[in-house]
Length: 270
Ligand code: MF3
Ligand code: CO
Ligand code: CO
Image 1 (cartoon, rainbow, N blue to C red):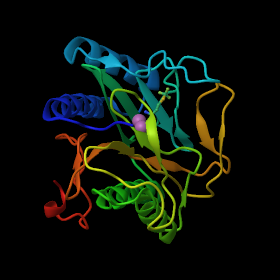
Image 2 (image 1 turned 30 degrees about the horizontal axis):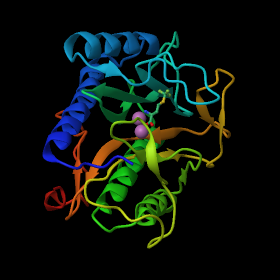
Image 3 (image 1 turned 180 degrees about the vertical axis):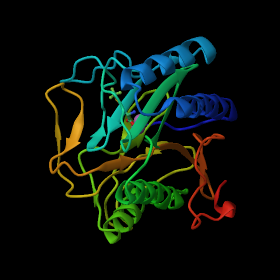
C-alpha cells in the first residue's frame, strides 16, 4: 500500500505528480481536429523524456494477460472508456477524449487524466464530462483520516446516477506510490460506512469512469481499449491524492487543471 512516512517521500511524490500534471497542461493546445492520437503520444513522450527527464510508467507496461502497452499516454475517444492505445486515429470536430498519463520520477509514480474536447461539442458530451469531473471531486471531498472507501464510492455513484448516468465497475482507483497499482482498490460505487479505513499518509487515485448510457463495458481485440457495450459516450477524470488528518492533498493539480466544482470550498483543500 502506498503510504507516506516522511516529508522527504511526500515531496518526491508531490514532484512526480506535478510532472504528470504538467504533461496534461503541455498537450492541451495540440488537441485539435486533424491530429492523430499517435502524434499526441509522440509529443508527450518527447516532453516527458527531454524536458521533464522522467520515465513513462505505461510504455512497456504489461500486467498479466496483456501485451506491453506502447504509449506514454492512453487516449480514449468518445465511447472508449479507458486504456485507448494512441495510433493513427485522426481526431475530428466533436470528439471528446480522455488523456491519461502516468510517470515515474525518483522511484515515485504520478497518475492523472483529464477530458479534452476537440472543436464543437454536443451538450450531452459537455454535461457528461462535467458530471464526471464533479463525481471525481465528490469522491475527493470524502477523503480524510478514518473515512472509509465506501464513502468515496457512494458519493461518486450517487452523483452519477442522479444525473442519469452510470458508473463503470470493472475499473477502479488504486493505491499508488513506489508502484503503479497498489492496494487498496478504490471503487467508484458503494455504500457509506463500509470498506477499508483511510489513514493519513495513504496515497490513492480517484478516477471514475462515467457512461452516458448503461454501465457495461468490453475490451476490444487490441487487448487494451475498453469501450461501452451500448456505444454510449464515456468520460473520466483522475487525480492522485494524499490522505491527511483533516482532509486531502490533491497532488496532481497544476495551472491547467480546471477549477474544482463550486461545492468544494477552498477551505476543504488541505
Ligand atoms: N493510468 C491508468 C490508471 O489510471 C492505467 C493505464 S495502464 C496502460 O490506472 F497500460 F493502459 F497505460
Ligand atoms: Co490510475
Ligand atoms: Co491513470
